[in-house]
Image (cartoon, rainbow, N blue to C red):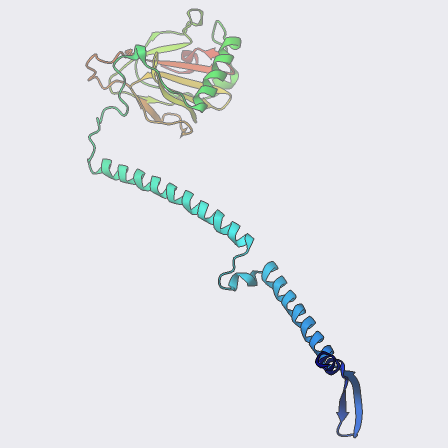
Length: 285
């Protein structure tokens, strides 16, 4: 009986009327029941909750709620942490580099002022690790030499139009002789003399080799490359841009004790499109 009475109360209809007081008439009227009111409130709650859920999930408003982080925000936080970690490492490297430079400037580390990199005492047993760029350059260079070497200097109009600078003072002690495998000229060494670039270009090789000592190669325009072998020390690195007459290295300081096996001349080679040229033909020594 109690259940039946409760159901009857839920289903009991009530008339809801909207009355116009000025005209003394009913404008609108309809019947409602307690069950209808409950169902209306329930579905209204579901609608409002659904709208709020969509707003939180698919709009930036959700990030303002305490304790809620969307998947996109989590991904951005992770990426930002990775970037911060990388930047921190780079800053640490820069700090160490600046600290080393500051120590050198303050005289905290003893450095030989006459040479930047010591030459090993026994050059016959040297094993040098080449960079990827150097290995690629050497492979291309050897491939060109294998197929394009000429027995005599080639007269090239493009090179003749260039104003080439003398790389260093000193007389030629051995001339161009490709027949014997000598693809350049040897210039007598003057102790302490600088080695200069013969023309504008970009450094494509700067390293120590066991047979030719410190060697630097410069790529010029008109497909020309100049190579300077047997330097005492180098002042330029791969990728540096140089101008004609700019100092790129030095020769012996004249204080060698004989412990290092260096040749007493600068070896200069000039190449054009894979062909060896006689430097003395294009440079006034």
